[in-house]
Image: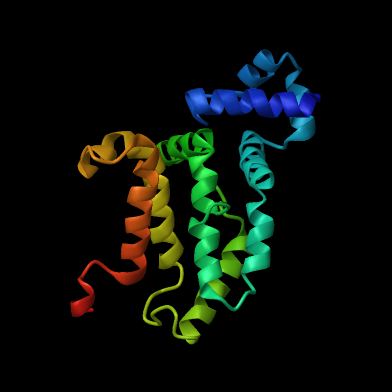
Length: 200
């Protein structure tokens, strides 16, 4: 493990344990066994260190490459699959509870704008949503930016608070199926609404 990798690993452990505000660069240096100057050699700031950890999660998942391949695609089902499918955003959060915890801390602390996703991803996503609106797949009266906000809220809040929410779903669902049971219905409601089909 290189010094840079060790710094990232120790920083992630501390951010997960104590949050962004509760973690100091001195503590990261001490636990990693490196000089603080070495941290600043690799990262301009504590925020840059945090953002690099999030990029690493995306790099490991391959989600960004899939995103860039899918965005120009003409099939809206592929766009939905990118979000909800087995290699999509939902799986990224499901498989990385520490990433969810990092964002949960940041939401509580409100210490900085996380710049997540990055501007280029936001731009391409909004462009694609506008195209889907023009093609009649998405209602044209909705502000495009509201759609990812709703989706992210539904998914990220579930993974950060599922332990306190799952009880609403009753006892007949096996533990390993709870995520899919909730998310499948939640995304369906997002796409088709809550009223019976006969009233739609």
